[in-house]
Image (cartoon, rainbow, N blue to C red):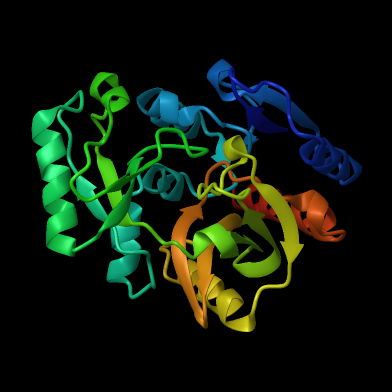
Length: 291
């Protein structure tokens, strides 16, 4: 009935999702794991481990469309997932009044070259950013993320990279070295639990690929309120979401909103697995009633 999709690069699910599958089985929901590339045919799909979609964004988007066309149901609205694939969504959220880290986008027509280097420096000069972080507009797990200073070239590695989806450029927030990144997990629009993703000393990328430590935390009330308010601005309420940001004083500065395949860190909060399993069961039942 339900497939939790993994991917070719990481076909095995993490232990906390095996526990989730067991909780769903106990609620009468036949739950399996399969890669999204295999196009599983179950009526319901939860793509929580599609951790390589950024390598094949067109194929992933086509898979979503094909599944919807087949009458299958994603537990987060597919239109939100498509929108969430490209980090240009940050400009949409900023237009809604969300406190987003300042973000500029650099269009790229294929491989990164000298003209793009100049355009990147023009952004830093116009924004008066002495240091900036550059990321692929479609990317996951910190892949391709780098830091540059004004006047520096982006790096030779990018010259052979496909950047056809464009790049995003943000000021370097030095606070993240000490504060890390706070990830708030929300279920049905309500805060469930949170972790701090703490980079090791000397590192600034708060991603698992760079040795980040995951620490359960109780975020301040204003961060919870901001996360829940953000989700209310969306055209449809997602079943699950992870709101990532940096706490700077009494400000929660949004870094990313994850609506497709976020690690939900269910194992860091005792009631989280039960809470999420119940929400999944309720969503499936609601869809079935409407069919």
